[in-house]
Length: 381
Image (cartoon, rainbow, N blue to C red):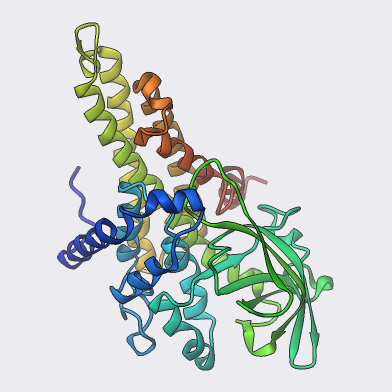
């Protein structure tokens, strides 16, 4: 099915980003996977070439174009190359809206130029050791003391956690107000009491740094409050649809690239004197997977169009997130089966795709939470 999402300028952007990946990422990604973190030089180069902060106004060093299709191009090309270490989607897709929509002019001037140049790597810290998808269960606490907030608590599973220079931290600022008692505080590298724990050892996404963070009496200036005090939970709810669509965009691209690699493999691999692809079972499996891949692609592209038009609903984003990621995991599992024993070998791309995919149904809100969001919207009781 012909894709109609992109314009010629997006195709040119894709070509440029592919060259960046070929030159600055491909030769280094294996080393980054071994060390568990991407070299900061890759971020600086990405910033120089305009791949960070595309939606940021030009006056702050960005691309000046708010169009999620550019974000989708970056996600797709990273997936196609199996470059799972780059935290650009977290930076561009998840953090950028907070820094664009919730900052005052002073904060924009202070944070956005480094965001776009790659000198300021960002993260957002929601999840805690005892709190996953239940954001209202967050225990990290900030208490106002003069011109500062004093922050105490711990976060875990934080993408870009080792490299991050700027971390948006979700904290309780008024426990008596429930959901209206959370605020967003920006913690910066070097603030006393802000410590990074382990670079977590994951089963996949090996080159991507994912860390534990701790905050012990960290004095965060009041000038680092992001958005309105007590509105943190609302700010999160407003920005989570784009985060979930970003994950869905990765899922759709992973399904397409895995399917194509598998089709090529079954054409080349022989069993019982003929290509595996000539077996009826193989044809039927791949016919089913091709249909599902096309359906996911069409739905995700429509959601991207809706996001650009300001019409993507919380429920539609939840649908895109759970359905695409569950289909991604299933497709990769079945494609690995078609590879036989070779699919279990990490030197084959299908093995890396299998390991990288598993977290997709978990982060950004688990499949179960997505279904709960959708189910509540149906007003069944």
